[in-house]
Image (cartoon, rainbow, N blue to C red; front, side, top):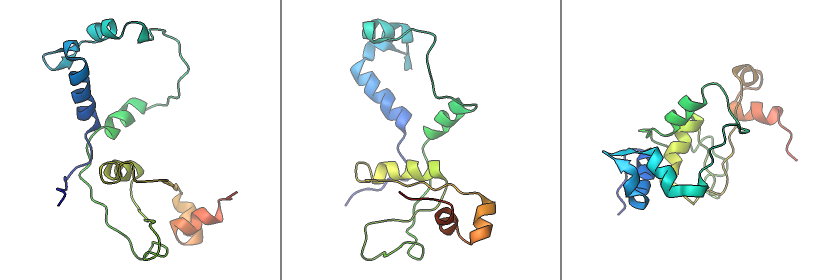
Length: 141
């Protein structure tokens, strides 16, 4: 039987462990020495100051939040799922980031597609349910 863990992946911790295995000399007292890491990586380091980036206010905070483990749990919603018994599709409702963090451990390499729907409360009130609101205002090609 597989032991279930009560949290999502701790990506930051796992990445640091991988780096410690691959580049142990770049760590001093448990912290990364970026000068040593740059020396190790040599010509693969891009020191150019000007770059095109996709950025927004709060991006750093969002990245930090995305790397913290989640303690949430997913529960199936039979009532909102379509053809529950005959399909492999799951209907999940919740905060996008929290749901994705929870899915990451249990469904790693098993999910073929995730469709995220974002709607406003005004649109929801006009049509009754989030899914109906999305369908009413979405064109599918």
